[in-house]
Image (cartoon, rainbow, N blue to C red; front, side, top):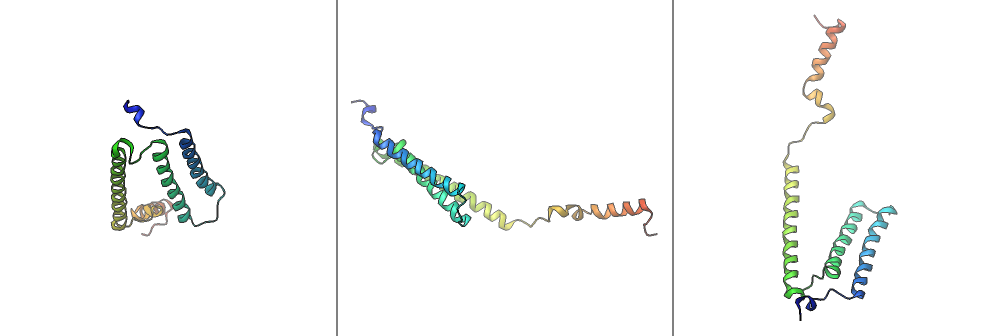
Length: 136
């Protein structure tokens, strides 16, 4: 038997089950956003991200056939390793950004930058000299 015949690409019923799961997991967040559901924004984002993570698993299992049985588990092991690396990179990036935000010096208000740089005082002196109201 060939290697291609040994690996199943799923039956039509398995593909349709995966398709239905994918559609449901897409429609729910779409409806939550479009219906402008009265919900805490943090909770709403959490639900959307959670459903997105479940949809990733549905795609891996039903469409990409990443299971422990496929290719003696090497596909699953490689996927698990990629997920671990992704979590480390994302967590490290968020940690660095949080620490940079916490340890940066506060910037002055950008609307008042001219005052900070002393431009306003110099402009007032020039205006006073042009209008003859400068102190002598």
